[in-house]
Image (cartoon, rainbow, N blue to C red; front, top):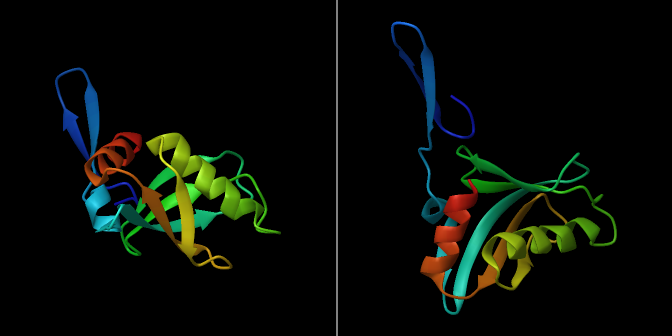
Length: 121
């Protein structure tokens, strides 16, 4: 099992086909609040690329990789930009400013936000 879910292999006569099934959904790593959604996030700074990596099922958090180092709020700013890039909505870190585990508020329609995050996984 990986952080993304579990993998099922189908073996046919001449081929092997794999499918990944996510066992968690965006609703499992977030909370609907007045005016938007709060996401529970695990940040991996100093990565080779920025973006959503998947869901950490053990911690129940969205994994976001960022290139920026965790200095002077640079990684936090990049986390907000990554989420804004996915959802198209303003985002703000509300808890965990100096921790890898953060809470990020995304302003907007909760159904639309959760749908866009689900598509990015």
